[in-house]
Each structure stands twice: as structure tokens, then as C-alpha cells.
Amino acid sequence: MGASIRFSATSEAREWDALVASSPGATGFHDWSWLQLQSELFGWRFIPLIISHGSTSVGVFPVLVRPGRIPRPADPPFPYVGPLVPDDLLVDTLRAFRSWQLRHGVPISRFDLGPAVAVSGAELTDAGVEWSGDRTYVVDLADSSSEQLVAGMHRNAKRSLRAAAANGVEVRPARPGETTTFLPRVLSESYTSRGVPSPYPQDIGERIERWAVDRDDVYIAAAVVAGQTSGVIVALGSHPVVSVWAGGTLREHRAANPSTSLYHDVLRWSLDRGHTAADLVGRVDDGIARFKTALGGIEKPYTRITSSPLPRAARDVAVRLWQTTQHHNAAS
Image 1: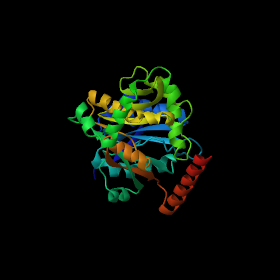
Image 2: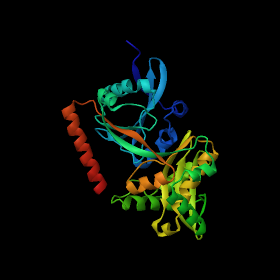
Image 3: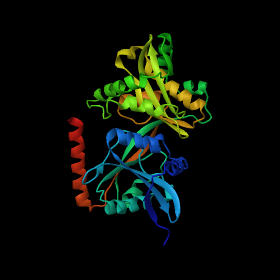
Image 4: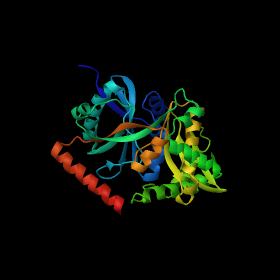
């Protein structure tokens, strides 16, 4: 019998971040400081598990739960928070995690496997987890240039860039106070347009701005139209693939086409820093998919997982109850 998978909680940020950085699937959403920040914002409990294979630490498993007598899954509004482990150990890790859940009283856990994780549906089913597919859009920056960035855009995106330049749109690093003011407004407009409230607290901009101070691996850009700030965007650049997390422009300024310029600026920042790709993070709907594709984004699949140690019948009931709770919370 081969070496077994074990989990141990850590309080060492350096150990965690070193293991994250060694994984080809690493994203800014896996970083210790990001997970701590978001857990404080939402009132989650962050359980940072180190994955060991025999006596060797091989990866991390960030577990986010809502505290209570029976912990519930946190369901973060950003993707990819899940295990980072070598592909050949993933199925064993998922099986071992279900045993960990049973021992630690976590009946349901929800997490993701990012676009870089190679695993089949049959393997996931064999590991005993429920899964579904989702999509994101990634712009390849390897061996690219500023000219190739534009050349790789669709015609309508190029047209939007020219229109923005003609309308005097300026994109620059966000100034103090702009993230605090405009990030929650942009997020609120984005979610409200889809018929749901923003899941982020009102102080999300202030907390992100404070967290990003003096960090050279976080880029926050602002779009300015006729002297007025029209929106901001936040990119996490701590790993080879940049995660373009959240942002955009206010609807009142959209006629000037600032959004394409804002995203293009993040892509240029990523290119200038030598990143291999920029993940535009998520599909959302057909309109957003077209926008991200027009920027040169290539559709990439990723996987959403629900894990439970419960027998299948009990698991199905628990999952339905959890989903009902989530829908109720979103509507209230």
C-alpha cells in the first residue's frame, strides 16, 4: 500500500504561501492574506489545511465554513478556492477529505478545482464527490507584446478602444479613496443588473484598498471620463496567471466605452510584469462571455465540487437543504 494522504491545520502563512506558489494551479484567491481578508469580511472560519503524502507536504486545502453548531459551506463569491495538490494525488486527496469531514463534523463542503487542474468526471465520481462544470476566460500572454494584445482582440473590442480614446477616456492607477468609493458601486450595479444583490459588504472597497497598500502584486486601475472617475478594477498578480477579480465601470459612463480600456490596461500591466496569462474570472452570462472573448479570452473549464461524507440519500437531502438556504439568503 502506498503512502496515505493526511491533513494538518497550520498557522504559518509562509508555509502556506510557499506551497501555494509551488503549484501550477495557484491563484491569488489561494493566498493566505486574501483568504484571511475575505474571512474577516464575511465572518467565515478559514481552516488552512496542509496536505501531506506520507511525511512530505505536497499542497494546501483551504476550507471555508460559516461557523455554527453545524458548520455550513461558505460559498464564496469568487472562484477556485479548493485544494492545490499534484494531479496524481487529487483523487486520493478528495477521498481523504471526506474522511476528514466526518471526523471534524463538516457535513457539506463546497470548493472549486481551477482551470489548471486536470481531472475527469469519472475520477471525481469515483472519489465520491458531486461535481458540475463552469467556465472562465483566459488571455494567453506568453510570448506576447502590446501590439499582439490588440491584434488578438475582436473587431468590436478594437472599435471600443478607439472610441474610448476619441472620448478622452483615461486609465491610470487608482488614487486614494477611489477603490473605497467606486468598487462597491460597480459591484452593486453588476449584481443588481442580474436581479440579485451584491454579496459583498458595503465596506469591501475600503477593506480592499487598505489591504492593497504597498503591495506590488495587486493592481487597481481607475477609468476616468471627462475628469470623472467611472469605475475601478482589481487584479491579483501574485502568481504567473493574473486573476482579474472584480470591477468595471458605472452605467452612466458606458457610452464613452471605458470598460474595454480598463480591462486592456490590466492586460498590459500583466504583460509588462511578465505574467504568462490573465484570467478574466468567470462567465456570468452571455453578454459578459462575449465581452471577455472580444478581449482575446479563451474559454476554459473549471469544476465546482460538493463533498460530503454522508450516505448518498442523506447527502442529497443535505445538499438540497443547503441550496434552498442559499436561495433564501440571496432573495432576502
